Image 1 (cartoon, rainbow, N blue to C red):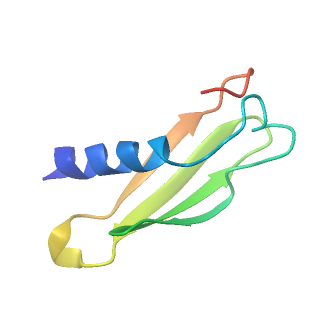
Image 2 (image 1 turned 135 degrees about the horizontal axis):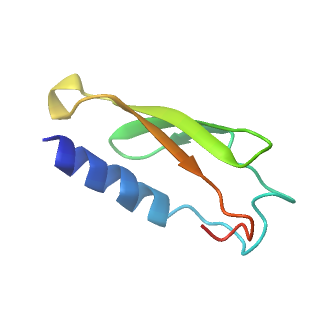
Length: 77
């Protein structure tokens, strides 16, 4: 079940439009991102670290969880 949720979260990120190199300059990831089944809240620190949490709208469809990552210096990943 958790593997399926992780796949959904990764797929969700693949559809977020972002310009190359724009993460640190014009755009940040702070905010709440909504998909058809999940709500994802992201906080980006100035050092490029990203933390967040996600929760399904329907608790019977999956478990809530957290994410943690780092934006690379080139802003592409």
